[in-house]
Image (cartoon, rainbow, N blue to C red):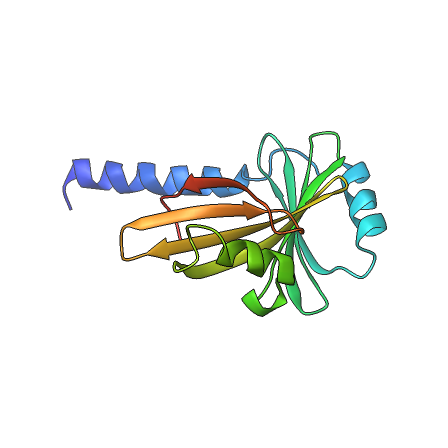
Length: 151
């Protein structure tokens, strides 16, 4: 093996080891874990992640995958849960049917809770190129549509 190749692989290995060792730089605030327990007392399989600007808890509740976000002080900011299209409130289904996206294919659907506000986020697409993220209120009002690069 050439000396340059060996140095490259050793550097890459060192970088990967350092990255995994320091991936959880900060300790999860006890306030965050307590707030999670208070809001979701039956949460199971909780995994925490430090996203540098906030903390994320991924967990299971009633057979569904949830994600909750907490600020750096451990205060709850929002939660998301994937829901089936059939679980959408009738008003949201009606709002989508009346929108210009009524014939678009629905992909992922999430219910987002923040403070006392609930929104539904729908990833929709038409063809292979046009993709949007739609936000609806529980009353079925489309509040935002944005272009997305992910699906």
